[in-house]
Length: 185
Image (cartoon, rainbow, N blue to C red; front, side, top):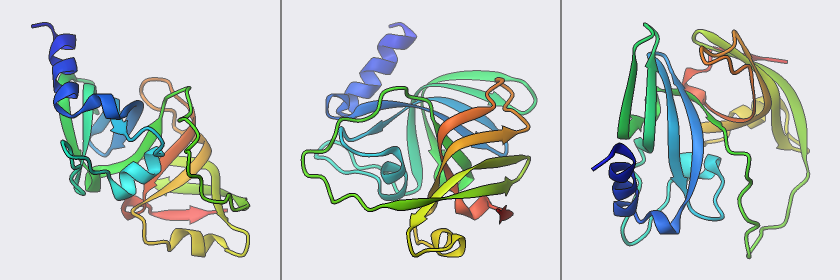
């Protein structure tokens, strides 16, 4: 069985027909993972990270994020390929979405609430992210940071320094609040 056959078999074991694949880049203090995770067809990556999902064949653990067709680059420049990996969410500094395709519009949409962008600089161990947080119209930055979700969204994100792979910008990143050193504006 080839690696891609093995990976496809693993995806089928996770009822991959009922999910969409999302290409992600996961930054941890020990290295960078790139691969695919799963979201329900009309679910945002941020919601999958914060709330998970459940079907008759798969229930995501609140502690681990499943990844498929994984490449892992450690800080000492060694590379490893895995068909499947489960990354502990507490070890994740941020998750960047690398898909160019947006999810289909939900059939039962909640009313859209107008939000205001808040320019923010977020300092994490070994990297600084600059982009836009989005808060309710009446909220200030502190209110947006104090929501109960573990991961908070940042859009139009610039990285300083650029990632080892040369990526210096992503349109969407979910940041683990547990690793934020400080946020400035």
